[in-house]
Image (tube, rainbow over all chains, first blue to last red; front, side, top):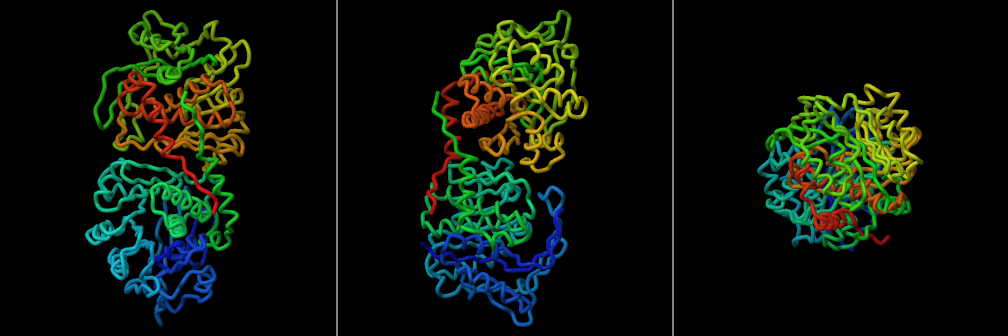
Amino acid sequence: MGKLLIIGSVAFDAIETPFGKTDKILGGAGTYIGLSASQFDIESSVVSIVGEDFPDPYLQMLRDRNIDTSGIEIVKGGKTFFWSGKYHNDLNTRDTLVTELNVLADFNPIVPDNYKDAEIVMLGNLHPSIQLSVINQMEKRPKLIVLDTMNFWMDNTLNELIEVIKEVDVITINDEEARQLTGEYSLVRAAQKIHEMGPKYVVIKKGEHGALLFNGDNIFFAPALPLEEVFDPTGAGDTFAGGFTGYIAKTEDISFTNMKNAVIYGSNMASFCVEKFGTQRLENLTKNEIDERLQQFKTLTQFEIELT
Amino acid sequence: MGKLLIIGSVAFDAIETPFGKTDKILGGAGTYIGLSASQFDIESSVVSIVGEDFPDPYLQMLRDRNIDTSGIEIVKGGKTFFWSGKYHNDLNTRDTLVTELNVLADFNPIVPDNYKDAEIVMLGNLHPSIQLSVINQMEKRPKLIVLDTMNFWMDNTLNELIEVIKEVDVITINDEEARQLTGEYSLVRAAQKIHEMGPKYVVIKKGEHGALLFNGDNIFFAPALPLEEVFDPTGAGDTFAGGFTGYIAKTEDISFTNMKNAVIYGSNMASFCVEKFGTQRLENLTKNEIDERLQQFKTLTQFEIELT
């Protein structure tokens, strides 16, 4: 088993969907990734920053799941990053209502000493310079570095983003972002171009349409589980990344064959995330439920054809 | 092995995509279904109607593939159905430029006597009254009746469509049409409502995002093969239906397990269709290529996870 170092926001979200709305609740990429990865009974640490307004019970909840929070800086007198958004009726698009960076504006991540030798590093969506700084703090090259990013950084900090993309083994990105980054409409071609930028593995997330894993000519596809109802998509991509890296940290096997399994576990975890508001479903998830859903993924995708 | 009876248009298409345009070429749902199903070395018959302007070499090409064309009426002095369309840059949407029904306006299908006992019936996209008339001409209830339809009939002949939906075992429909027919955004719920309308099996086609097969609580998903380039999507849905029914006619097994395989073969055949203009790729397809692509589908979807 390998140690997993996670960097990502720990934040407040206020969410409105066709099914209801929340006050300020726990959110942030680092939170979702951490909660998701913690299901694999691994050693993990979240590096992040919050304000003095951040409730200690949230941090305690992470620690209760064996997540090291010593890398989460608490800024005295500071306010925690806050995001508010409203989803449209189809839940595939949303409007951002409020973004208050607050303490995140001056985030200077410090990797805890006992995680400078982590085998697996998950760089959640943040400014690429912050992501790069984490890589540079590692004592030796980790076994696997996974990067998540978004279109905002392509629009505003493309050069820095390209620098960090060079340094990672896996990138997770959604379909529209893959097209924007490469100028290629075909996802197969987009993945080829991203390979040329550095990452040996490219995961393209298609939301309700599943996720594709590319490794040169090898392609694997994991569907999203068809659900009767998607309640709140917030954090689904981060939860996917947490399932993906949590499984790899547990197995410490970075072959394509095992990474296929990691993509299935990512999709498995994400299917729970969207069932309730925020982190609610992840907080109450059991190992048994994950195992049962894995069986559903098998039924959904596995077939036996003898050539005729 | 069962006999497959196909009803659908045999027509002229003129197609424009970002990659080029064609003059009037061979098209029509019946043509695509027939060509696709013929790859399974089965006995099949296409029931349709064409005008005197329809070139005999096209009919001969179908007969060369062991497709019975005695049910294709040739109207003296009549003109063949003609459709023309232009695809947008993403190839997911298109504008219809011309629709000339011509002889199709008065189509009164006659099932050949030696196909009135066909085990499998594939009702290609046509006016629901025409589809119903074919069912009523069968000597006994076929083992499996598969219906394809589209939003046009929901808009214009909903009552007749509901009548024919009641009579069939399988419906193939795209995601937007499933939503329109049921008023449900969730495809899982849409499939439940369609089950209540009659069909025990519901296939929801999602284009480049694959296809879902529903049978009560059983759900199976077949991805579309990720391609470097989609050249012309015309006929892909019909080609899917041809692969689906051709495989079932060959195996004569209508269990859920076998229908999963049929969906994979549908997706397999459709992945070829889109590689060239019109029916070109299907006309030059070999059994070996289909077998190779089946292997690609396995690599794309099959995984082995031991519960941890």
